[in-house]
Image (cartoon, rainbow, N blue to C red):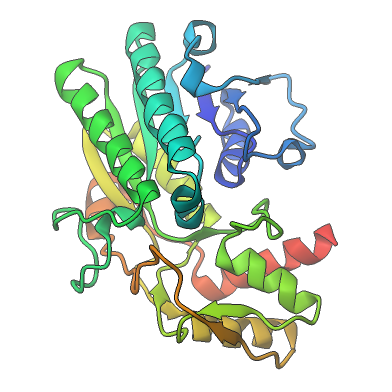
Length: 310
């Protein structure tokens, strides 16, 4: 039986990935220090095939966690561009030191493959659209820089230590188990929660900044395919290959919620990229990735999940 480790198992993507792997018959180990992850994200995960380790990757001490593991899905990080600007040291310790410790332990344990989560933020605000994996990198925040470090270090381990690695550049992932109440909440759950409560959403800037919003189910598919494909030592965009402005997002939420709430515009936010739009042809061709849930369907599912949570 395949044994997989999910770091950041209490986070939004990690908790969804734990469930996906269990459904696929994996024995799953989850690791989280619950600094930003939430225990409630793992409620109902009671399978005998799941073990949870409360550890901090930055502290090391991972030998027992990695023993006998086939695949590692490295989702653990301190997320958010604004959070990294507020506390760059926290982001560096979690995202850089933690990743280094994990890759060393995975190498020593003979893990078959490590799939690491990177971010579209590594591209910066280049005017070139859509973003391709071979274009210049321009991280414009501490968070973006730490994610670039994460993927580059994974590629170096593939080259120098024969540890099979793949890096996935996520574009604005959204879906169930994403915290809508945090000060650093992602825009879709935050806006959906506010508008469900009858509040006008706050838009930083003119709202014409655009994002390639990617429903969580597409990201889960990409991770599984990245773990099992023959291709290694590569970086892939994971997205839907489209663009939605923040103003269009508010319109779509009003349509789904049957409301008519207008956004309140404030000053642009430091570190924000103006446009994010992925070319996903490399992932299509090399790992067989194909988004199966488009923006509107994903938005409806997300709103339904937030409503169900109360």
